[in-house]
Length: 500
Image 1 (spheres, one colour):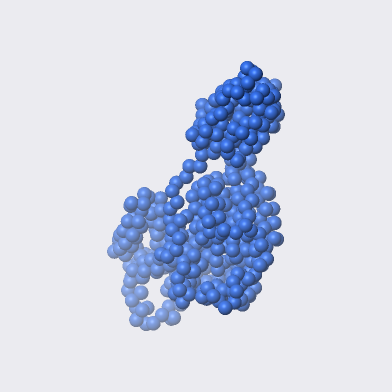
Image 2: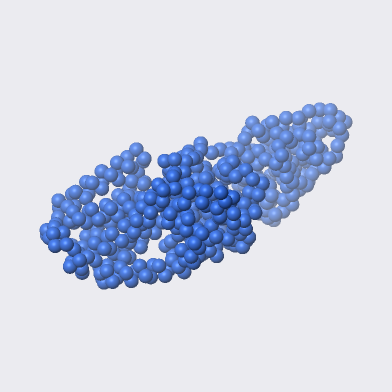
């Protein structure tokens, strides 16, 4: 068998030249695989050949030189055999604490591709893995998706260790435990689960471990790869895994008894279990007065209803139930629709699709022009459509209210769900009027009550009802009144503060 075709799990050879050749060939003789040969002089006049192998660009070059090369070329060392010399390098030369042993080429490839360096000596059948990984990341910035008026301005980055450090700064407790595993047969992406040991429910934690361990995929490039693999039901449009890029949201979720799943390469962290009412809550709710936070939270639930039902009710009433409208309003709507060639359903579909196109265009365009495209495009297209007689002015108002209400919700993925269900309700309204809408809502409620997230009912704490959790569901009680953690997540330690 050729050297290039040998298995990755083959043990390292005692000949240094063979190991170096195999490493180079195993990585396709790539130019960024760098070999720095060294020579260690001993007091007896004998010299030992060695090599430092690393991938250029993944290492902190200055750190590697100080860590591995400073002192290796010094003369006057005792006359040691190869294994003793390698142990001497581990204990006396290498200054970093991240040192491990390498016995196979598979270990060597994983070490190099993780950004670390390898020290090998001629005559030894194993080498040393030295932690010289270069952590390059963008500066910590304010999250774009979940921005707040009052509260922390920092958000996670794409570097896992930077994210775990931010979480450690939020929760300075020894019971915050982190477990890291590698997922992805090719990418070998680091995935860390974080939880507070004396709070988290052990059944939920074990279920998270089980589902992550069952993932068998080539690549994990973003946390959504994990989310779709571990969610309870894939046939639902509702998100059963919460995602956020805010460290304070993750810390608050962990303190309630949930488990965070952090993925290297993305700022978005997953929180499980997730419940429906959680997607209406913002971290800012706890940084404002309780009465104001309650008002805003109720406004979000109202916006949810408007975004979901406004076009459907307009279609149903103008098509089947005109008698429900005041006479003056009915005459106004009739005069506006005079000359419009489409029924209300087609009219609403055209406007909704137009707004969806403008919404996507504003997201994909550069930031400097994206916002102007969204605002100006909406005004221009809406006005032009009314003047051309394609749609009525009332329909433009209905679709505008729907779009604005959609943006009130703090969870972006719930907004996507609303957009999907809204079209279904519009079809039911066009076919059966208000009866179709109510039928769709009944099916929707039944579907929501049948969902769960890691063993927790999705509609909890409303179905099943937990009265103590109602203090932080539709309303937000003052902080001193939030004595216990949510019973929804069955925490090991249910009390979070003493009663005053």
